Image 1 (tube, helix red, strand yellow):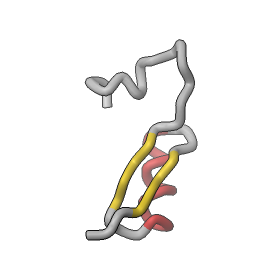
Image 2: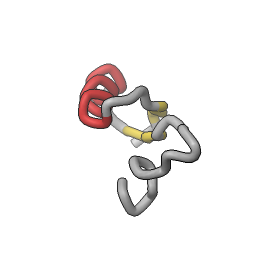
Image 3: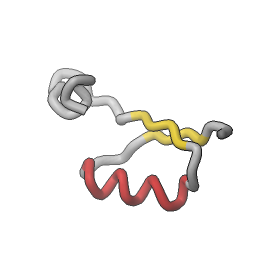
Image 4: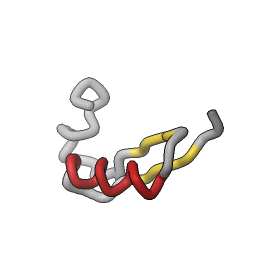
Length: 46
């Protein structure tokens, strides 16, 4: 994440975006817990 400058960019506050092939209801709460912020998440077909 640091290499993508998602966590270190204080000038522009954007929601991190994730793409998953798994269950959204399981992934989103876990990701938000570890990142400490709201995320955008999209499900893509396997």
